[in-house]
Image (cartoon, rainbow, N blue to C red; front, side, top):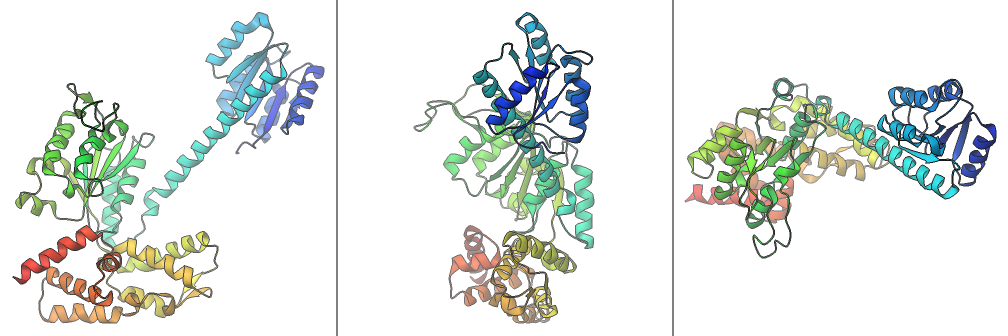
Length: 456
């Protein structure tokens, strides 16, 4: 049961006092229930949760201390405020050590009563919100939320289950949009570190001159804008998990410092003379082949082996198309609820187009397409007209793949041809092309550069 906001249980064997407090609190819009003794209070608590229980310490039969013990054990969502005479303050303090929220001495002042109850009520509701958020996180990042019945995804699920509750560093590889961060969160929230921080860092999104300070922190005066000491993300993630996305974009200079942090389990803030011990699990991710980056001298070999203890390779959506109907059903329901629309299914023609499409942006692109389609849908069934032109032209993309197979082109050549086709569709607009491809502009520019080099 969830506690009802503003509901209070008053427990006192003095009917005059409990009714007086009831009147005072009801005047402040609280919902008040009164109990004659501890046993009476427990019967109420068995059927209704209260954010705050206000109980006398000295009562006939079950006293306040015994009632507190039962509430702490069986009704931990309730905050208990003890009421006591001046001569028994020591007993009230002892009760706080055993789990009471606070105590009030008799005669009770109205202002003090209201302030204490407001604090207890606020703390109880915040605690309940934390419980609900943790339950939501557990649902959102359980293995069940990473959908897929295909063999490649079942192999991924099996590997995630086996590594989640270990301390091993993980490298997640796969194309943009395959769900690398979702997998990282699933690993964290199903491990022994789940109650500690999960800190994601996009190594490509933070300017190089700021990345070192963001990761490792700095001391006051270490550079022009360092006006105070600052904890880095390694320290923020202590006892938890640090997710380093696009790890291949980390500058070589910082790779050396990261290697030391991984090996020695300690970091040194910028400008500091002493190291700080950290207990952090590293999960790194990249859409590049790090082994090739190592050969090209763009990534440290020793760091590569430190991070790549276990590699989880996520398959692109085009290699697990049997998962598309399952993903579409989930995304259709999610998008419909979020937009308060009654789009319940899609036509066979619509599904056929989705299955024909090459999905360069993978699951992320599929999710964007489903959100767009639901937003534009005029009925309860998604039709081909609800899909963007890029999806409706998937027939041409399929011909591209078939033509490439006949010409025995490499996967790299096929990718180059596809990028050219997308650029043609967007009239050369690289920003729109990157969106359609499901990659950032930096990655698109790099691929265009590779294309130019291959044509020389």
